[in-house]
Image 1 (cartoon, one colour):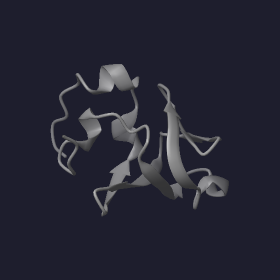
Image 2: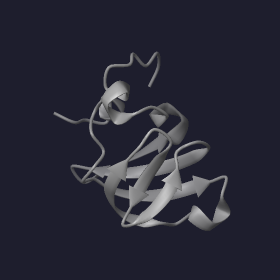
Image 3: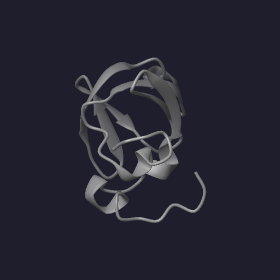
Image 4: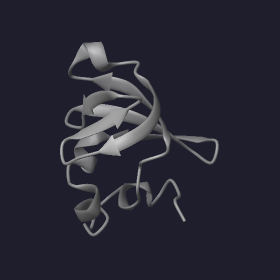
Length: 87
């Protein structure tokens, strides 16, 4: 079960997402459902957003969770196996 504490170790596809801040200012404010995820990007409603230096707001069970994209830098199938020191 996905929770705020273990969100980094779960699939993000299908979750509602918003780009809160980004090094690329034109990507800030993008909202929608996560459609795909790769090693370095997340696709939100057809728009590809870099994970590095980006803060994402994910909606999970009516709760908003802000996630630093640098923690997401990995293939989804590899990220769920990784140990994350402090979250």
